[in-house]
Image 1: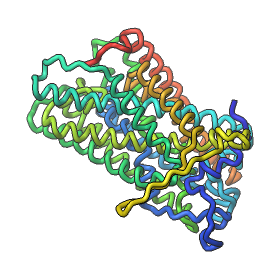
Image 2: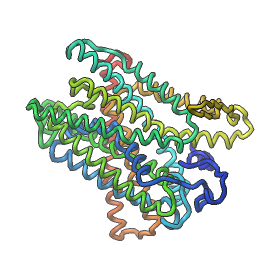
Image 3: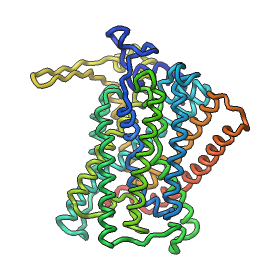
Length: 485
């Protein structure tokens, strides 16, 4: 059970700039904490790292389910709603005044300041479940990309019909080992370099997918498309059509989910003016994301038509040029490595801070062993902590095992998007904004906000049903530990 004490004192580690300043007053912000140095670029980089991810590779499949009319329309509607509610959320960083009020260092603190302790607990539960789910989803995606690199080279050498079978479990374990090593980085604010790398890679693999789709269109070997999508498919029952549409909506929701760390990102921006700067960064992040989604979704669907794969780069929508597909999948891996840490480091910080407060005298938890390596070329200093190694390794192992048990890309994306999008992107931002601005019930703005709230809730519930049905079907039809081609 998450309690308020679980969150108290977390700012000592979970704030994005958390270490104590020791160089005097000039190094402190208006709240007495270390001065934040984030810029428009770094905030935009964090957003792009969070929002543009593996979900972009499922967009052609999503458009395939919804068709030429509803597919692009759904992408644009989700984009506008996400941008609007994210801008509302930026005003909740400070309370009660969005410019001069007290800072809220995390999303949960903003909820507690505006909506009270009960909603704070609910928000924490949803956020932590989302972080765990994302770690599982990232592991699935990375393992499939690593497996795709192996298979691409195998098909290139032995032909497209060759039995290039290898278990994705091997690659999931390999990815888990990489994340165990990176998870030992003590604090989130030391990962800016990783976020910068991870922010660039989505552009590369998305562009590869778009370029290869365009080449397929130019060659004339395109698939049949439809204005209504899966509704026109006579080979599916009415129930199957409905479930697929719901599942596609969940995929879109996942593709636009990032608001649950928006406050944490805003807390990196230098003061004053973080409110305006974060709004600009949000506009850049969401608009850039939408552009790439529209390009990838529409061009990918035009190329593959009703045969659009769930993941255009790992499900072998393309075989050649093999080296370009390898580069794209390598970029996916690099992006996932960074995104995994962006989310999991926040979870680590909250949990470790809570445990440290509960057991301040435990040497197992608090004792650190300094490691220092110095040479003419470089200097390496690191504080080794046994508890940090243990708990973070355990988390990565758990996420890896879960990814091996349920390795279903589209269904997992839809489920994660469905459970996280409405509460974190819609409900809490809307309710916090109404509370902070003291908007009266049944006023025009209140009614508009509640209409968005209820509408997105219904869409999320539908997406949850669709993703669960898809997962049940996949689990019933697939042996999870068999070799996959």
